[in-house]
Length: 321
Ligand code: UT7
Image 1 (cartoon, rainbow, N blue to C red):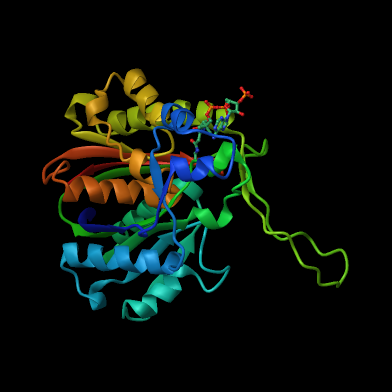
Image 2: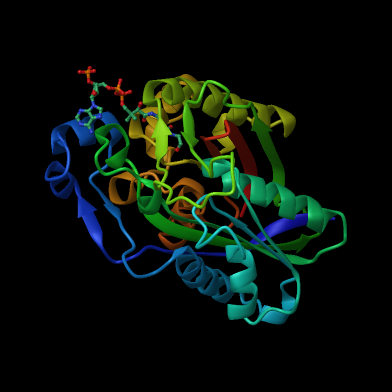
């Protein structure tokens, strides 16, 4: 028993935040942001929460897959910015999408979350226990971004991407790998609730994400080419067999460096970071959906998608469409 991609969808909120908008908030400029990251603009959700972005992306993926709600028996949402700690976005969506009382849960593997969701769904279907899964990466990172910190606030945006996968006689989703290495150094973290030392209820400050950018940059440029090579070796494929590499859109320079390390043409490294910035778990499914809808990824194409991020986590998948 194998799996294949049945359809994809994505959704971004309407409001565009340009680099010029951020120049009004912190000591930054368009030249620095574009040359150091590749980002020109990003989206910001003012009225729609994470489950709404996920819902809109899910509707498009289900339509593309031509799958009816009662055919889905597994729903996984990767997010670090759920509407609220519980219920999960997946459980909210189960009801809104009119699914049966199926298995539905959220996972947190930050920017690698979608690859983790794909790995879990792929293995659950291959086990024979499930038939069709809807997997989603959805984030509203603007909720957890500190707009007084120029090191991070220029990077992040809001989006959702979705994919329906199902049983296949041929191995179309050929391999999925996921890894973690505990971030004890605190390269990319966000504080949670403090421990209670007494029973007093105090107003808490809102936590924000924090990042030591250059350390994460070094990590990303190491693991991205490594996971691509491992996936190719495990399937006895050459990099020339790939139509595209669709990497997590965290920084254009990370993608440029991977292209040089792998000796893979930059024209085949899919990039949309200039429009959306870093959208964490949504980044990979948003990019895959755009590439499919833009006829850049076509049936029969073999591509690798890969991601890296907080955790630290990373992973990748080798997929034939
Ligand atoms: O999705 C999860 C994974 N995340 C990533 O993969 C992100 C990885 N890291 C990066 O993409 C890059 O490290 C950043 C884009 C975050 C930063 O770029 P960098 O080239 O590593 O810059 P840096 O942090 O070393 O900072 C260089 C300088 C510093 O100034 P000084 O100390 O040299 O005077 C920063 O204060 O750039 C300054 N700087 C800025 N200047 C203008 C940092 N942010 C800004 C800014 N505008 N927004």
